[in-house]
Length: 427
Image (tube, rainbow, N blue to C red; front, side, top):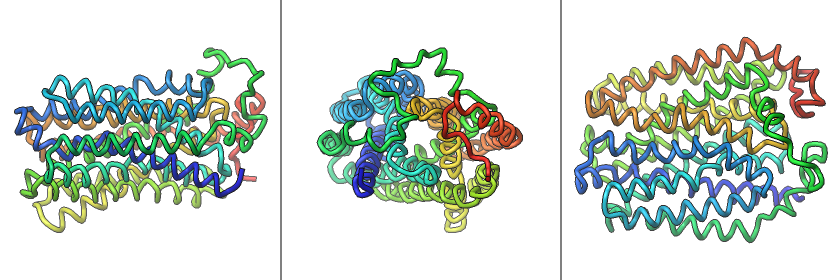
């Protein structure tokens, strides 16, 4: 496989991830319109956002297991087609109930995309780029959120909220068609290392063998938990910042969506920067990955707690942007840990486990819990409490750091069982 084709695979996979999150986050841009038209509470609005992440969390592992056996490319195309059609269904929803069903189907379509997509990307690039590529790929969620909220808000203000959903759905269908033509299983397979690939003659490993490998060390479990908890804050910010700017800065729908989109872009930049910093800092000492994650978690806690206690204005926006930059910087280091400490043959399932933790601990409860708190305390009061989740995330990262070197030595000694790619100890 040529290097050029590898980057084409990355670009198209990244594009589908953009479509994934554009379809997911366009809803947040039209929160004010839906609230006014259907007289919805903040809790109900939050449930429309949270149900997508909930379905992703519940279904990502079984669908990724299926993708590892049935074909990752085929699974990605079917998934993209489903979430795009479901987004078109949201455009014609006539009530909260119909919109909820549409959003649920969006979540089913998106359930395995992140884990399977990143497995495809990492399979065509060198191992040394894992944290960088993982951070960049995961950041596609933030960049997709930028486009979903900014473009969706502009379209909604000009043509109504239904057209905002329709535009996202059509874009996803077109991109899924291009992906199906350009990316094929046959062209991906030769690039992978033969010892790490299950061939057609290899019988699928039973679950009783695979599952222990997904939770093979304390440090991997800590990476799952810490990464998931840290995304609680990022998920809440992406979901509710359009409404925050609409209510507290008196911005119209288009401007509030565009402004919130800029903050989502900052979150994505933080993901990429966290992955790059992790790769560079940990070249000689792998344990430094945890220092990057801990620093991002603690920094976001301090900055966001400060930001939502400042009066509205330029200073608050500056501190809020700095907190947003750090709040998801743990994504790259966490994904690199998962890639290094799990077998390549179940790469999609391993990333599905990470996605499960991120969804059930962070992205699903973040918007929903914030909405429920907003009904009681007001949106500002809810956002003042959200950053406290970083305390638990920091604790998980500290536990992982404590066990990291011991786990690496043990897993390196068990390389024939756990797979040849776990060795990360410095020479």
